[in-house]
Length: 186
Image 1 (cartoon, rainbow, N blue to C red):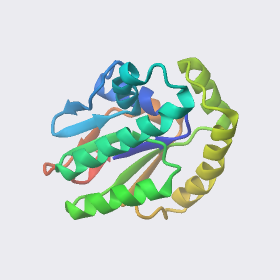
Image 2: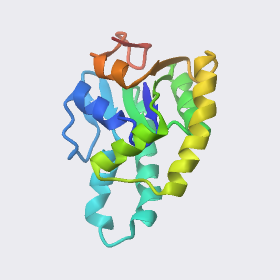
Image 3: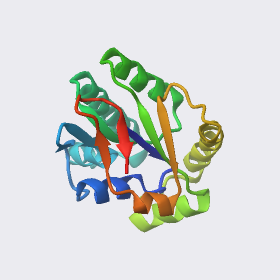
């Protein structure tokens, strides 16, 4: 299960609420057989090594580490609930390929908030994406949402679109008994 949305949409907030994340973790969190993976975990782990490095140079390292952690958990056969940008289709295709190799599926929860709300979310958390980077995310997000609303978003096996109010009402993400099986949002 990948939780995607614009930067500031509330992905980490949702994972915090559902899984009791504090935001200071440096490793994926175990919840039953699932691994809960938020990008902050990689950012926090790398912070001690990359503190003197400019922010722009840290981003690719942190992102690559985050993607690697998701892929590793999937290869190990764990169910995964992970925060992802969602605007990079090659990443989604890679995760779908890994899931199918383990006879599992990839499902998406898309947090559909408008750009203005997402921008406010960035300011509230104190981590603001550059205007250029945010504009790029917004350009990629719009066609993704259009395809999701039409019910066509390959290579995902299932898509759930939530606005902020629906995300706030979400109580749990449950998996079938076998690891990596079809998740259900409740």
